[in-house]
View 1 (cartoon, rainbow, N blue to C red):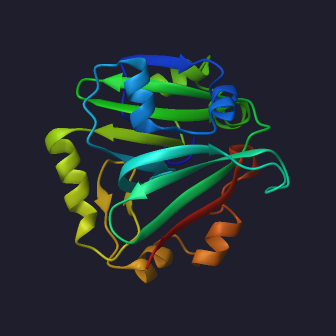
View 2 (cartoon, one colour):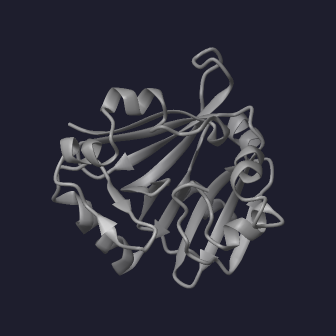
Length: 214
């Protein structure tokens, strides 16, 4: 899966019928999910992960998109960002999505992976989505941080003029100097990036992606 995290996860559990629950409730936050499942997770903030792009924020909200707002039924993820950033993504809800809680040592994450993505990118190496996720192979997620780990994420971006930073496959971090530098790195413009989901292939189900800073 493009932009995989690579972090091994010792505990992988699937949320049953997450999109149905989202539709009936009208939305859900990462903080609310953590509270509802009563998991032993320390959460001070999150980092939205999109194929290696990382955006720290205080929370993220999953929302079912209004009927007719997209060409297909869709759901979106909006990040409660640090500073004047705008980060949201829209996904094709007609794909076969599964949502998972991942845990290992002092870190946790919520990841969402479709059958289409798994079949296109990981089925040749893993027997199931569960196995791929346990190996840290997913394109979209929200990492959950607490304490010093969250302080590090927040400090990494709050004094910069970049909308996001990039986590390389080897674990190193690239922090652009500003928005123009970020879009030079990803070889796009904000408008093109939004319209094509940052160049996402169709099997990822990413319809729109906005990552900007005022």
